Image (tube, rainbow, N blue to C red; front, side, top):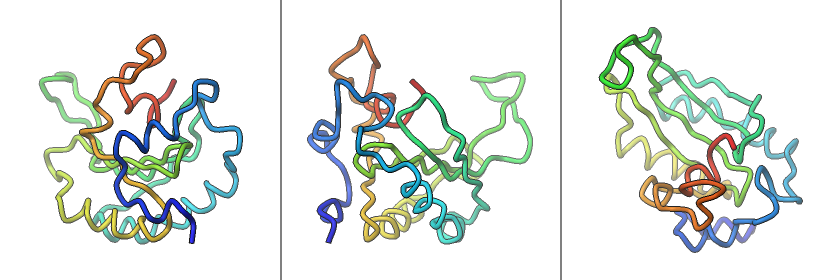
Length: 159
């Protein structure tokens, strides 16, 4: 059994253990080809769990994540943050290049991510050795603010 399969949900210690002060986009031993192939194979079941047809973004560059399964609203809508309108995200499942970590987020009030959906995703990915990182940990300050402000940016964002 892969040792990461023992961890279902990451804590700050897990993030710190997978941090690197020299490798920002991916660790030296990251096998991009195999990781992407594995993530590609998750789409059908993740779409079923989410109730949305997910699309794989596998053209990620200059980032600490390498792929994400995502579903967007069909048309732009205005909001306080974007009065002229923006395409809102129903759900994104973003895969970090570090520690087999992933995050789940969305910004659509038309179809918010339910606790049951989040738990089903976690239950599906955990036996495959993926580790969920909750928002509460990702929002914490990163220890090197000259590089990035929080753990979200460190492991799940464009750099």
